[in-house]
Amino acid sequence: MTEAKGQGPVDKDGRGADSGRLLVDKHVEYILSLDKRQEEIEYWMTEHLRISGIYWGLVALSLMNKQQALDKEEVIKYVLSCQNSDGGFGGHTNHDSHLLYTMSAVQILVIYNELNRIDGAKVISYVKSLQDPITGEVSGDSWGEKDTRFAFISLAILSFFNAIDSINVDGVVEYVEKSMNYDGGFGSEPGGESHSAQIFTCLAALAIAGKLQIIDRERLSRWLAERQLKSGGLNGRPQKLEDVCYSWWVLSSLKILDRVHWVDKDRLCEFILSAQDSVGGGIADRPGDMADVYHTCFGIAGLSLAGFKGYNLEQVDPVYCMPVSVVKRAGLRGWLDAVPKSWKE
Image 1 (cartoon, rainbow, N blue to C red):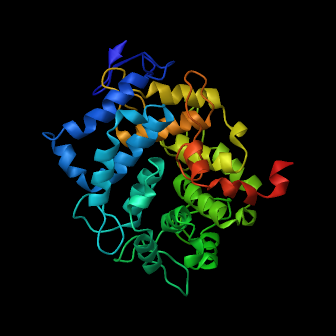
Image 2 (cartoon, rainbow, N blue to C red):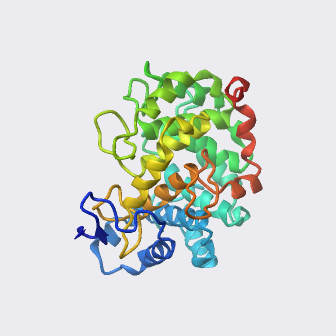
């Protein structure tokens, strides 16, 4: 047994010494410690990710049934401080608005059942302002970056307010469909290489829009299942290393496709657990690397999707990446009704 840099003890095969258990208490401590590291340069270098970091931490805690570990009112007060006059949210107080951070802010408020604390009309107006009404393409911010991520995020945000019809949904779907490749996958834009994370955003967008029938289910399911490597972990595209975050990006898509059983879930769970920091808590991208809240969130979400039996995790919704109980309360499990009937046979 050796000591990996920045991580607790690991076995000679690189797996964590506690690889069979989910270290819940350690992960809670790790997430709570993140706002107490203000003497570290990394704390300030990641300022632009602050609101997303809170979302990642809150989802991880919620899935472990430890949501109460965070001070709800303190979190909500901070989230509200990140909203700008245009209706969108920045990654931190006084940062420019962006769809990514607006999504995180709205998700946090939905988890806490406090969406009424913001002016929904302003958020809707902000999202609408980022779509080209003719082409249907959606930008991430006022500077015009376009990406299939924003197709999904725009629909997801609006669905929380029951307002997806306030934008050109057909245009969004058309843009997503143009980004579909011969291998069944999706890229970040038309002609872009298929990538697991982009596949999730496109599938989730189509699920919300009720247009899942346009995909090639068999071909896409095969491509996703082929992402599992000998370690049990999943990669984002061919010839790349396994990474814990793809436990979410790949498995969520397979869940939407009802094909989670096409991968070895037990081996995947072993891989995720092997990337835990058994001393400081948190989960890394792979065994031996430094833990971070992003991989902690998506590692735990992956365990939930895989049906991990070692701890009573909350079920995670594969479209919204929040507990199923939260999505049901918000009235947003309707995407299941849009799943083609042939997939259920």
